[in-house]
Amino acid sequence: MEKEKSTAVHAAQHLCDLQEKLLERKAALFMGLKVKSILATQERPQVEVFKQSVHTFYEGCISYLQEWSSSFTDMKCFSWTLLEDPPGWDEVESSLRCVSSKLPNIHINETELFDEVTSVKTYTSDKIGLWDRDIKPADERWAEIFTHFKHQNVPFKNVAVICQFAMCLPGTNASVERIFSLMNNTWTNERNRLGLETLKALLITRVNFDGCSEFHARLVDNHSLLKKIHSNMKYA
Image 1: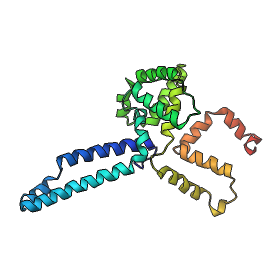
Image 2: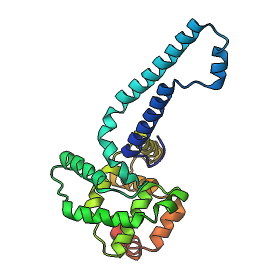
Image 3: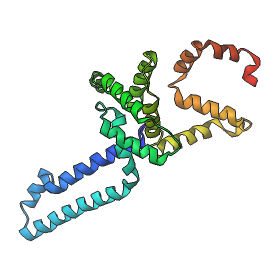
Image 4: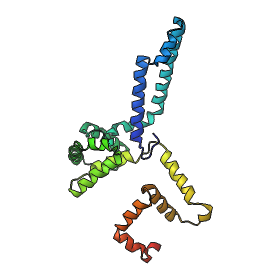
């Protein structure tokens, strides 16, 4: 779960999938063939004791997962944002209810949201197979959708609010620890006079760009930014 770009929605889904697998194994009292072959040579009382131990083991695992994943309960209704299937309104409505309760000051127009979800559903119906083949992560799928909608003047502001809420929550603290590590490597004793804004800019650049080539490509196409770099504005 500690992969890059893993969100709380991913974590909730992984935990739910793992819990379902364990429940299936518990119901079948799953044991490997090698274990079963060894049990076949044992006395019945010993076999029953071992089976009870296996059952207890599965019970303990499931109980631990249920307790550990309780903090992710609210995130299950956002699983549609992973775009593994075209979204349905019932799923989105559950997310809307959650966002409205967590962020009461954020207004989302339900009528507009329904139309936006319909547009997303139409666009994704032919895209999901291609995305799955290319193993395209959810954030890139949404970026493609919103870019297309922007060029085609298709509204998406309400569904974007829900997506931002779902994807801004990290699934683990690995990404935060990674940034602290980058900060320590950047803000060294030799560079202890770095200003906070400069440090922030360096970290944003290093975290959000895949190497210097991508950063360079973004720069050369941004003529207004290049103009500022070559002027005194970079010192402002």
